[in-house]
Image (cartoon, rainbow, N blue to C red):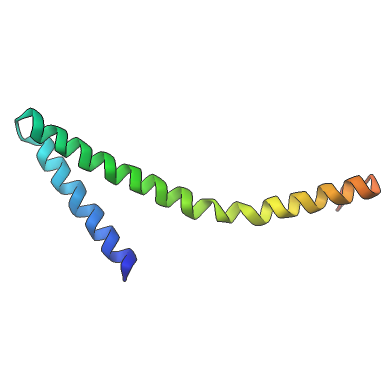
Length: 78
């Protein structure tokens, strides 16, 4: 449920930000740009947070393979 709430909040912030960008006025346009920018920054953060842990097992496997190579002189699986 919290994921859905954050998705809805991001969607609302994006719509409001885009609407403010369409209105005239320097301050209003700046607020709209900030809202859209914050949503983009949040989305990038979520993507990085989800992809980061996925690569950890691959790194551990690579480290074990390097240790095996240093110990035996052969790369595992050859």
